[in-house]
Length: 192
Ligand code: IMP
Ligand code: MG
Image (tube, rainbow, N blue to C red; front, side):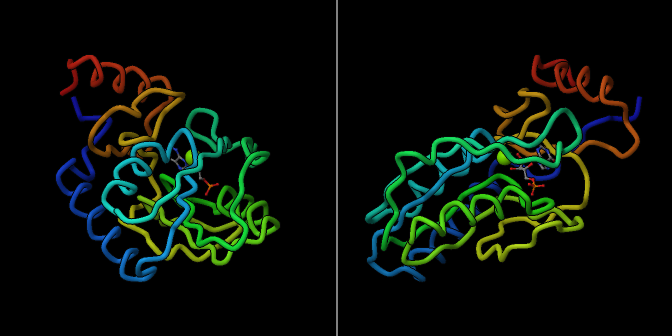
């Protein structure tokens, strides 16, 4: 049977790119303190690996952003966790799993700008080749990817697949049910 999920990026390559992005970031900010604002749940592993690779004076903040249901974006972004965020006069880098339509990052940018950071930049593990509804500038984009549904290293299908250490892409035209069944088989070690 033709595989439904194909491996796009392996764990070693992710680790290498994260180190590269962290080195670039550190050279951009020098010894200045940086606040990494990670978007949960998808940005969790990228945030954690990037924060450790970055070194120096780093603060961590997490926000929860939700827009996807199954394979499709709902078109609305729900943000929570902003209440206690203090980023005034600080360098902020928002860390997310994937830049797709741009709705999420745009909504986060609007919310964070009103808190008057010293600077604001975006880091995304994946930059999807997709139509942007709300474009933002992603200064630190690690991998360009085609417009396919992806899971792994934080990215999920209905909550599953985040704990895969590599990134997998769904073949075009596969039903949501088949995608789910094959993902589960993969997670249980029965994938092809
Ligand atoms: P945007 O708001 O359309 O840019 O989408 C960004 C959010 O949608 C990301 O933070 C992800 O959580 C989710 N997302 C977009 N594409 C995918 C995908 O291919 N797989 C899993 N989640 C995705
Ligand atoms: Mg997300």
